[in-house]
Every structure is written in structure tokens, then in C-alpha cells.
Amino acid sequence: MGAALTDIAGLDAHLIDCRACPRLVAWRETVAREKRASFRDETYWGRPVPGFGPADASLLIVGLAPAAHGANRTGRMFTGDRSGDFLYAALHAVGLASQPTATRIGDGLELFGVRITSPVHCAPPANKPTPEERDNCRHWLDTELRILQPGLRSVIVLGGFGWQSLLPVLDDAGWAVPRPRPKFGHGAHVELAGAERPLHLFGCYHVSQQNTFTGRLTSAMLESVLSDAARVAGLLD
Image (tube, rainbow, N blue to C red; front, side, top):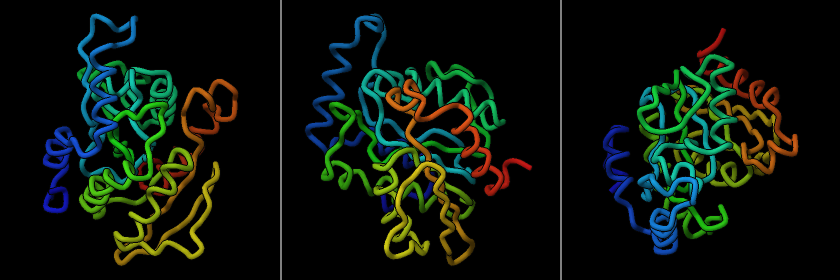
């Protein structure tokens, strides 16, 4: 179904009804029913989470999967948890977001030239989707890349899972991925030749609490990667 879609709004509308992975469907809906005590009065989203950001974005940020009590609760990528707080604060600091916080849909947050997506659109148990679940979800990422391709200039991948998931998608979309494939690392930067123009691929440690609380990823480190990718994408001087 995803291959026939030609616009972001249509993609998102179809994606949120996906039930392809029984384990993920069961988990996201169980979490939405049982809830975390601090959110017991809220109605959880409990469905696949679509990408967030403008349909003509020139910079794409690729994460891993929605968090059980973050995006799976709010229905928007990286919204409602500390990982999102860290990411959106950095986006705002470099001029790519209208505000530094992301609490819920309708909170006024707007991204400028940036879209955020993930290889897996449902919250997985222990934040660990299986290879089969990643592969089941891949057609959504294929379609999103195809729709964004005319204006896309750079991509930031948050973490090794996203990096390994995205490289074959980029290859199939027509960008020349080197052999052997480039390795993930924070600050990695690879220019991929394309039929129309090159695509700049950047690696960044994931904004997980494990990385941000330990200082493995600092705000300055994230802002540096965001700034470099945004300049290549024509979003910053």
C-alpha cells in the first residue's frame, strides 16, 4: 500500500492504521491501557507514530522507534519524554524549531525545514525491535524517502540501529552507498552521490537517557551535528 502513496499526508494517514507486527501491536496497546502512574489520567495514542515535520524538509532526522510512554502516549515523534526534551532543545538552540519543548500535539511546536522519522513506527518492548519488525516497517521508510527525495539534502541518523536500517533504503532510492558500507559513529559524515544531487549522511549518538545522562552525548555535541547538517541542507548560513 505504501508504494502507491505520493504525499506525506496520505502516508501518515495510512501508517497510523498499520497492524503488521503482532508483538508490537500487543505491546503498544497494552502500554496504552495500563499506562504509567504519572499519566494515568491521559488517553494514550497507542498506535503507529508517523513522522513529524514539513513535507518539503531538506533535512531528515532518523531515530529508532517510539518510546512506550513518550511518542506512544502523545502520538508525535520524540514528544513527551526526556529524549525528546534533549533533541528539541538542541533543534531550537540552532534555529530549527520554534520552541525548546515538546509536550503534546497542538503545543505550538513547529520544525523549520526538518522532518523526524524512524525505521520502526511502533513502540517495541525494551526499546528493541526485532529484525523482522524492522523489515516489516521498511516500506513506510522507503515511501517517505521517495516523497522527500526531490528536496532532501542531508540526513542525521541517531544511533547504530537507524544507521544500519537506513543504508539499504538509501541505496534502493538511488543514492550510491559505498562498499563496504560506511560504519556508524558519532560525527560520521558521508557524501552519497545521487542522480540529481548528493545526499550528506551524518551519524550522531542517540538521544537516549543512557547517552545523555552519562555525558556520552552532550547538548554541544548534538548541536554541532545539527548545525553541520543544516548548513549542507541550506537551512543555516
